[in-house]
Amino acid sequence: MDELLKQIQSHTAAIEAASASSKEAAEAFRIQYLGTKGIVKSLMGSMKDIQPDQRKAAGQALNEFKKLAEAKLESFQTATADESSEEQKMDLSLPGDFIGVGTRHPLSIVRGRIVSIFKKLGFAIAEGPDIEDDWHNFGAMNLPEDHPARDMQDTFYISQNPSWLLRTHTSSVQARVMESQKPPIRVICPGRVYRNETISARAHCFFHQVEGLYIAENVSFADLKQTLYFFVQEMFGKEVKVRFRPSYFPFTEPSAEMDISCLICEGKGCNVCKHTGWVEILGSGMVHPNVLENFGIDSAKYTGFAFGMGVERITQLKYRVNDLRLYSQNDVRFLQQFTGAV
Image (cartoon, rainbow, N blue to C red; front, side, top):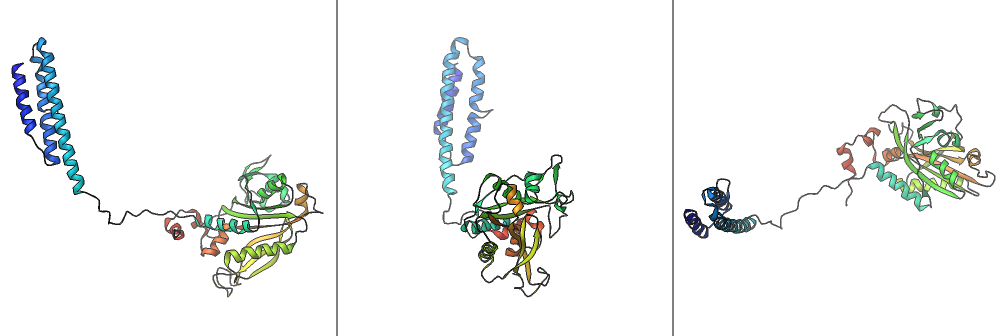
């Protein structure tokens, strides 16, 4: 017992006189006194040689010695940590680390622009399911059962009898709107659609559409033309020329394709416009009376127009993208071209 106390007194004096001016010195002190093979551990091991009636006093002395060593180590660590932080103090005059800014996908940019243009004209946004039944996708739109779009080569069927499929156009959303609302109706229907086509630079098995529908009393083809004129000027500029060509769609009558003067060659003729000076951007027409009657809308009282465009085609013309596959390949080099200024 006496020998243990003498050792404690000797080491206590050494601890009180110790100093540490660096992290290395503080670590050396820790190892010497509080390490697994340190002095405190060694003295604790000698407790087995103390008489049972003296162990309580010896244990108290050892605990006080251990607390002294721990307190001294803590003071060393605090002092050296302060010195280290002073040495490594941040220079606030240096430029900060670069934080990369994400980009919006070009299709999202153009879709948002299309929606905002038609919102100015009072069109609301309507959305519907990607998986549709045969009636809303085909039957309600005056598409007969032998229409080519119903062929397995053109359409992704999920099941048949009853038929469920991935929608081939967002006209199915128009059908659901006419089913649940009464005129006047003024909506645009943006969304993804699907076709069983070979993937190439000009076609893909999925793409995006924005279709529009306006039904009210006394709606004419002149209303349709003026609406689309406004859209083209807002999207491409007032210098762009527009023309309508007669066409055929089962759900509109009369129907027309709308072309604009080629933005790349300014109407002079190039590979993009196939040397015609014109590029087709959408289909349109007056809503077929059969479609109105399918939803209980009196075709003698109400008329309407509809139109539909591919977002990829508009984006191609807006940003001169020459390969549709780029939109879905997630190539960062392509996407970074659309980084915003803010």
